[in-house]
Length: 292
Image (tube, rainbow, N blue to C red):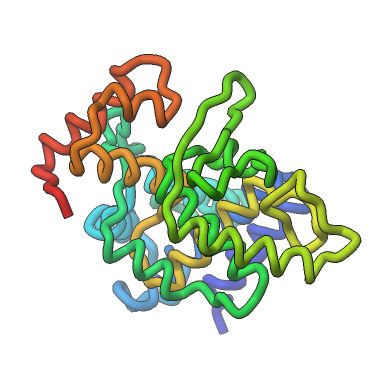
């Protein structure tokens, strides 16, 4: 009986992690990308043998990703994972011809910022289990990113003393400068719920210096933040990848389409030049986005 594609993937991941000492986040990316590729092989191409994978099938997978609005940057990352996998198969004498060898990466210099629709935001909200403290934390993360446009780094550095609930004002620091942003009533609602539960749950481990913490009571990492966003995107059955920056881009477009002057948005987002903010005005014009 021929070895399954799943087995070859598992063997490759083992070698990458333990023989080549790849970083954990690199191995995690390999695992996710190759699982998606294998699922495509089974459901779309009906292929279960590694030797039947051809360049045409690889290109079909890339076109499938494009049709599902996966960004060129993400497609390039998946293609890089495939290159590593098939290079391993060649080196291990499992296959004789590398189907990825002559496939070029996409140019992504002109990629548009990734924007979430109102429906997509609501779908993400709907799949968060708010009965747990981590669920309340994650809902607050979603609402805060969506209503302020701050970066992941800024959010993870926040302490409770940076919030002014009365006027819904938040001081953020990005390592270089400070600025003030404003958050929604829904963010305020979930902030209060989360902090109350956090105090009860962590007791002596509770610290007001860090808002977003992990199960050990220490600061949530950027890597963990991206994982939880990936998890909720999967639960909401997104067919494309999103990141913390998707919320920042969405905030910018929402504000501009609802009448905010570009120079004021520049200040809220912490851009050094207005040209960075103008990207969103150009996107609105290019895609014909309207007030929702």
